[in-house]
Image (tube, helix red, strand yellow):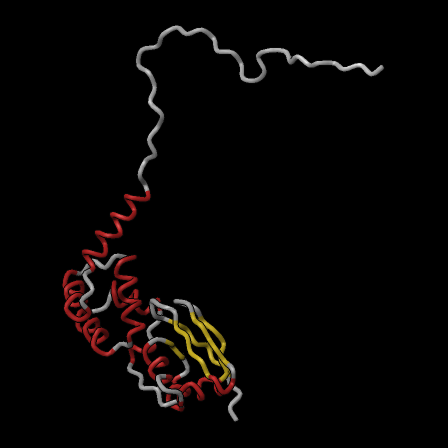
Length: 188
C-alpha cells in the first residue's frame, strides 16, 4: 500500500470538483489551488469515469512516477508551471509555442491565455498562432481589459459651483429656532 502524499494543483481557469462516493470524498479545487492528496485517493479517482481525464487536463501531479503508475498520459507540456508558461511566452521560439498549443493539456492552455493577457504577449506570430489554434483573440481580450479599467476609473461628478457669487444673508444655524412652550401642571 502506497502511503505517498502528493501535491496536486488545479491549473485551469475554472473550479475542478471530483467525488469518490465509496469513500465519501468530495474535493473542490479553485483555480491555482494546490492540495496535498494521498496516492490511494488519486488511484481511486483514476478508476472513476472521467478521473484520468481530470488529472490529465486540469489537475497537475508533479511526480512522474505517480503519473505513470496511474496511467496518466503526459507530454513534456504537462509539467509546465507558471514560470515555464511565462518563459515560453516571453522567450520561447514559435515552434516551441506551437508544440505547446498542440500537445499541452487544457489547463496549460488556460494558463497561456491568462498570462498572454496579463503580461501581455507582444509577439505577433504567437498571438496569431494562439487565435488560430484556440480561437482566443488576444487583441480583443486586451481591448476588453482596457475598457473595463476605463469603466473603473470613471470620475464621479462634483456638485456644480456658482461662477457668480451673490451676497446672501447668513443662514440660521440648524436646530431649534424657538423656545418650547410646555404646560406645567401643578398637583394640588
